[in-house]
Image (cartoon, rainbow, N blue to C red; front, side, top):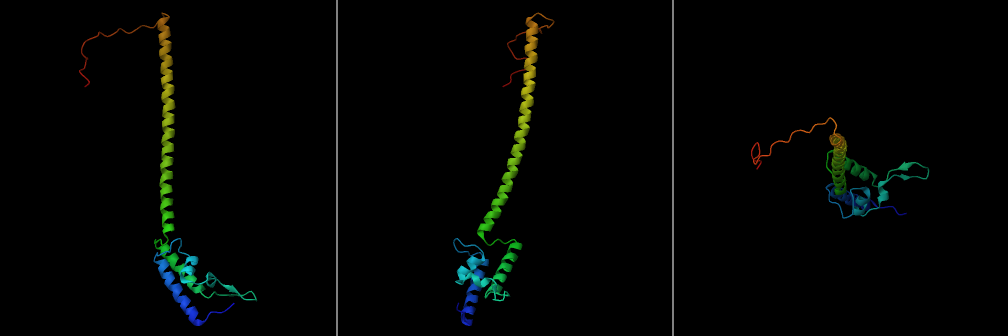
Length: 166
């Protein structure tokens, strides 16, 4: 594997820094994210330069551009902590999470209301059934000639007793 020259390394670092500024500004390419993969693609360098390498003896040596990857990750984390969301997908995810929370609350509130209305309906129907049973019992007692008396019927007049309702 060929080693890169000092000129190539400085040109790659300049391209990486320019791409880093572009990504951290929020200028993402179509289909790209604010990540190391997109950073490497924008700068035209291999991603492997961002990661540590192993010597034959097992010891680690830093990747050629590992310091830039660490700087990129640190700056991106600082922006996130400051509340700035660079990646529009992350912003969309946050908006959707907030919307899901609001909708879940609305569903819970509606479920509670449905439960209350169902309980009310059950109570109302049972009361109506009890009243109906009592009325039927009184009617059958009246028909059988028991001790139930009918109330006198009020006199029929042509006008309403308290005036018109309209």
